[in-house]
Length: 250
Image 1 (cartoon, one colour):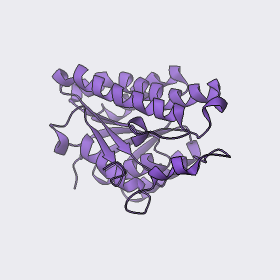
Image 2 (image 1 turned 45 degrees about the horizontal axis):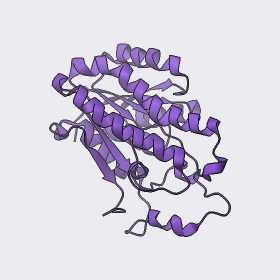
Image 3 (image 1 turned 90 degrees about the vertical axis):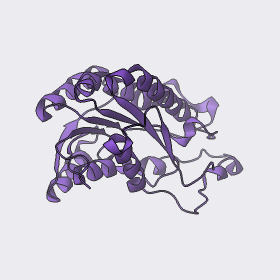
């Protein structure tokens, strides 16, 4: 399929995990992909891999915690590519911890990347998406709606992404900009590897995260859902949160 031929797409978190899989998927479908990430080494490698496949991508280093840098980078991308047709906000971080041990610094950092960073990219990109009648796909999580032990700041940030997604969808429907989100369950990515339960955690509280298929999801499976929501195949889908969790909460 070449659903994104002649289209320009911005993907955050593109250096690894779901973001990398999304960048590869969209580029393979014909998009010119602006790959955004704080990991410059991983970003360079990912863009090189896409180019080696004969597809088009360019690296744009950005730390979403640097709030003043977000708009200039988005505007540079739009200028370099000649506009934006879709934005996929995939960048995210998290941690496990007992509530009493969560520091304000951890809270601010997680919400700063997952929620505020997503908002700032959306805000900066919207003028270009209004022009192209484009689409936004944000990355929430099943943690946004399902109890997720020992992950209070992460769950709060992803709940905010769900609310932000639905509100933006209504705000910009008349301008023909669609805003949706994916909500992955456990996926085999570096961020999952960094989620280690705190010492003394009640593992019975965590067992609900085991998938009914008996296996963890793959980044490519989430990327396929993101590609659908960003494409014209989802032209009448707006304000939706699509779970990609193998039926964890079926």
